[in-house]
Amino acid sequence: MFSSFDPMDADRAPFRLSLAIPVWNDAEGVARLLRQAAELGVFDDAVIVDDASDVPLDPAALVPEGAFPGGVTILRCEVQRGAGHARNIALARVGGTHVIFFDSDDLFGRDFPQIVALAAAQTDPFDFMIFRHDDSRRMGEGLPGGTFASEEEHWRAIGARAQPQAIGRGKAARLVRLSAYPWNKIYRTAFLRERGLRCTELMVHNDVELHWTSFIAAERILVTTLIGAVHYVFDNGGRLTNRRSRERLEVFAALANVLSRITATVPNGGLYFLVPFVRFSWNLIGWIEANLDPDHTAELRHRARRFFLQHLNGPHMTLLAHGDPALARSVLRFATTGTRR
Image 1: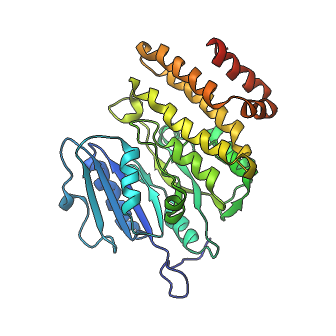
Image 2: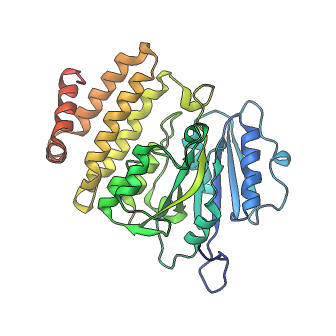
Image 3: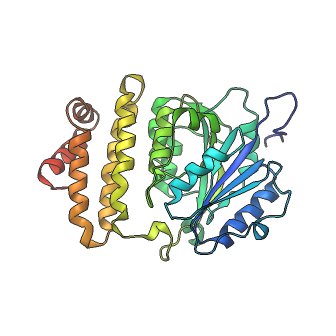
C-alpha cells in the first residue's frame, strides 16, 4: 500500500496534471470521461479539442463549473484533421507541469489516482511515466485485468513492478514494443515541447510518432505495472480505428519521422531502437495490408518499398542485418522485389 500524497504540498515543487482530450462526434463519451476525471480530483485543468464534430460540443453539458481548478478549455477545429492534430493543439494550450492525452471512448483505470500520487512524489524529474491498462476484449471474456499475453510479456521481461522504477535504454527498447497508445503515459509537458515531440497530423496511425519518439528522446523513463486506463475496443462501427480506406497509406509520414530521429541519434542510444522499430514497421505494414480495402493494396506496397529503400540504405541496413539478420533479409527482399515472404 502506498501512502497518499498531496501534489500541491508546499514543501515540494508543484505538480499540476493537465488532461488533453481529442474528440470527434462523441459528446457522450467526453462528458463521461470528464465526469470521471472531475471525481478523481487529480487534474488541474483540461483541454478538449473538438475535431469538427457534426454537432459542436456544448460546454454546459460536459462538466460542472469549477470541477477543475485550472479550468476547462474547449477548442474547435472547423475542418476535421484527426486526433493527432487535436492532441498537438491541446499540448500547446495545457497549463500543467505534466500532461496525459486521453481518448473520449476510454476511461481511467482503478489505480490511476495512485499513479498520479506516485508521479507527483518523484524527487527527480522524469520525462514520462508509463503504466499498464485493462483491455475491454479481455474483460469481455471474463479474463483477469491487463492486456494480452504478448504485451504483458514485455512488462515481465523488464522486471517491472508497481513501485515506479527508472529504466535504461535496453529495457526501454523492449518496452517501446508495446502498442503505440498515447494515453498510457504521464508526460512532463516541457519534455514534449522542448524536444519537439508531437503526434503526426494524420487521420489514423497518428499516435505512432509520439509513442516512439518519446522513448527515443527520453533521458528518464519511469515504469509501473499499476493499471491506469481501461481501453475499450469495438470491432465494428465508425471510429477511426475501424477505417479501411487509403487514409492508412499516410502512415509512412509517421514512420519516416521516427526512423529519421532514430538514425540521427544512433551514436547516443538510437541504435537500441533501430531493430525493434523496423520490426514494428514491418508488422504494421502487414497488418494494414490485411485490413485495407483491396483497391489500395498495390499503392501500399509501392509506398512501403519506397520507404524501406529510402530510409534503410547503407550503414543502417548493415546495423539492421547485425541486429536481426532474418528481418534484414525479409526487408531487403521486399524492397527490391516486392515479395514479403
